[in-house]
Length: 375
Image 1: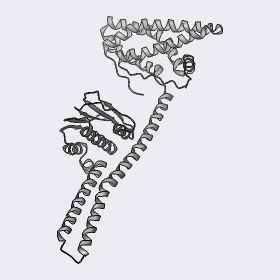
Image 2 (image 1 turned 90 degrees about the vertical axis):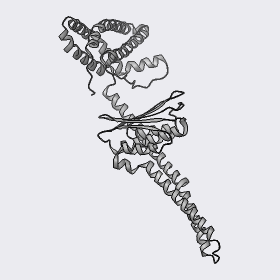
Image 3 (image 1 turned 120 degrees about the horizontal axis):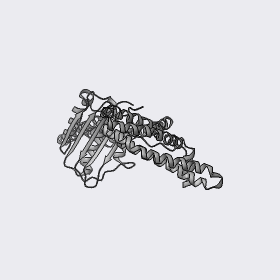
């Protein structure tokens, strides 16, 4: 379970004081509508009353998540409705009525009122006795945030289901990304280096025929053929070197991201500022993914963005490597199926990373990848 941060003292005291009337109103409204709805269910009028009651519960839960997030600085995710339902308000209500999140919200509403009384008293004491407010009020806020997270956030089963689905999607996207990369390498070899080497073979074959002939008067044409073959061979070697560098450059393995990205950006036709702070060095898959994302993004920038300057910033904390590529082009980039940015997102997903793109019309464009160092 993530550690709940301690809220600032002033915010904690304000939360303890202001929450009481909210809890009182929620307790009265939810309890009254629930009891009246249950008591009148046989007369049919109880069904819309119960619908209102469950809506009030979910509304209060949503408000509590936002209120606690603002005052106590805790993020409480909204629980996922686990039961599928048909379209329509009545079907949604039935699904909510049978879902555990609704009853957990009801329990929280019922216990939040007496808890709110205690917290209100603690808030008043915090004002009257400053040391109490400084040392105790934030701790009470932290405990309340933990309690709200346990009742109003996703339960353990929902979290595990969401995580399992995320890993399944990530694995599927990773397989697709690897297959797309294999096809790209095959296409580059077929259309680039292979064609160059075929031209070399043909030129050398023609030169061999010239040399085998009895007439050596065409020695200049033989030299031309051999020169053309030599040029094609050098181009083929260059293309193979670029292809290998795009897969995994040796400098990346030997000297890390800083040197590899500096070498990469030095070959770009536009100025690129590079800032790399990734100590300790991340695992090799993270380095490879980072290099690939930066390389492909900068290639797209030079081809499509109309930019005359870009920047690359790579930082690391304990759990994540953050990659940000920004350019001053015309903007309008987006992630769509089959596009280059979608391929980068799939590549990031192979190590459970996330890629986001912010590119308003007129620029600037920011491509950001959050890559975990553990998965």
